[in-house]
Image (cartoon, rainbow, N blue to C red; front, side, top):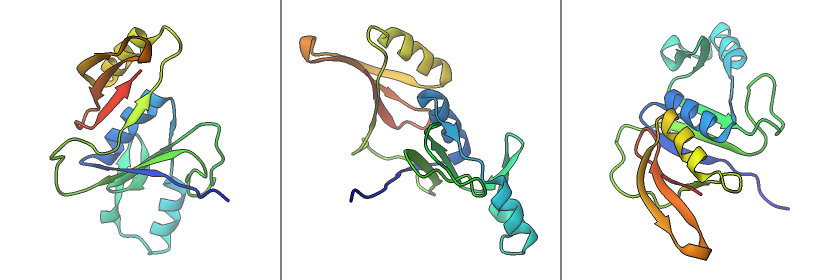
Length: 150
């Protein structure tokens, strides 16, 4: 049986980076507010571990996004399928990513995709044209993580 997985991405502002990637991939930001409220009420979580972002309580330093068609737990908001988890770390990005995301456009839609990603806060780094083998842009998200738009 294949194993489940999630991709974890280090960040300096998990909630903001989750917003970017949710919009870029057309995913949904997970909403753990019901779980956070339960943990606060039971005294299992201190107020310093909570952040309010876009009107919802969430765990400070963590945010996740999930594919909108995948199942998820209604109480915790945690997806049970394709998801990305962003976690704040004290150090900034210091080199090239060893793993990156490729975002695919519809056929003939690369220019439209790149423009939309730029409107969300991405930056174009370099265009790659390999002729029949492919054409894509190397881009960076708002925290400088490289990804490809193809």
